[in-house]
Amino acid sequence: MDEARTAHTESLYAKHEKIHAREVEGLYDRFRDVATVGLLGIYYLLPWFQWSGRQAVLFDLPARKFYIFGLTLWPQDFIFLTWLLIIAALLLFFATAIAGRVWCGYACPQTVWTNAFVWMERITEGKFNKRIKLDKNKYTAEWWARKGAKRMLWLFFAGWTGFTFVGYFTPIQELGARLVTFQLGGWETFWVTFYSVATYFNAGHMREQVCKYMCPYARFQSAMFDRDTLIVSYDTERGEPRGGRKRNADPAALSLGACTDCNICVQVCPTGIDIRDGLQYECITCASCIDACNGVMDRMGYERGLIRYTTQHSLEGKKTRFLRPRTLIYGTLLSILFISFCIAIMSRMPMRLDVIRDRNALYRTLSDGRVENVYTLKLQNKTEEPQQFRLFVAGIPGLTLETDPAMPRLEPGSIASVAARVQVDPEGVRAGGHEVVFSAERTDDESLSVSREARFILPSR
Image 1 (tube, helix red, strand yellow):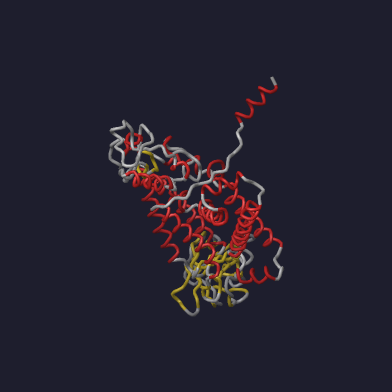
Image 2 (image 1 turned 135 degrees about the vertical axis):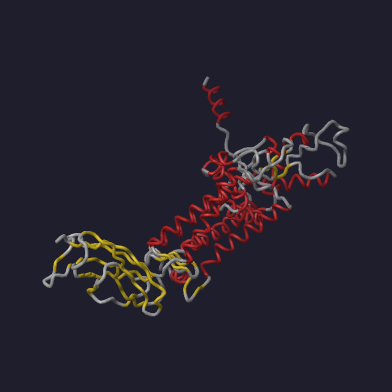
């Protein structure tokens, strides 16, 4: 009985088998290569670009400044980051509704780095058949040499990835200088190590398991699909029944479909699925099976497209509608958010003014009969150059403004806190609350000014 139970357990819990994706050539393979090289090039080279004497893209957390080329964002500009994240999410939904998991197949970091690690594996271990043979003949001299060379390449690439990641938060030239002299700080060492280890295991070892078991996008993507969404699909009507045959054989004469049952579409799949079984959540829409099947069709003298990008409506002989409610809603929201974001960025003021009323006393009556309200003005210089400002107040005839101390010269990114006393003769002015407007303008450019409203209180007489 124990032996039977053991056999039953083993049949339920089969050991995970490593997927060796076969090499493939074709249009989509070239497109993936271009996307991988381009995206990795941007990631690794961007921190080294300089802009006006500083790193072009730098998220300086200690200084609480984000540099993106000529744009400097402060903690008060967090709304722009939120805005961008919403745009990115909607763009992903829009692309998924139209073209399925195209993000996963070509631009997802997991896919991009896995492509790079697989490329290094092929350089050191050889092509498809040789890698399988190498894994069967373990612990030979060749196995140690090839596996060792692969691990060295992986470790170097993962370390470079972690170093570059931290280089977006610490000036990368300074980081490099401290790295070679072993003077990295504790947090810098931690994040370089953490991101290097994560890259090594995610892209080198886990690969398709991240997409199949860890990525939430694979789970909820079906909610954004409909029968007009582009997917990688096998044409069952044309391909079935499957069967082997000689080159240029007429499938109709053999009572067969176009599929030769060569299984190359399965061998090239990075997640190890059979696209002929229909749409599956593991499919990342990389189109490797399309390139592989088209190659077989060319050799057999058959028409391409047995596996292709298509829609379920198209496979059913119906017309595909790209303009439909969900794509129109996504497209409209994206356009509104993107246009408003651009307008907000272009009209963003290089200074910020906040007005805070004194909560200890609503007003004071001075010895000469005038009424005084006290405020705290906080003015921030959001430029990269020192600035001098002038302050004004308006809203009630005869208002006067006194500040303590006098308006200082603000250094880049600095915030000045100034006590402002606003006074007015109450004669002829109704009692109660009045709206007043505080304004700050740059002394060198009067067109650059910012205003904030506040409440001025006059007592009843």
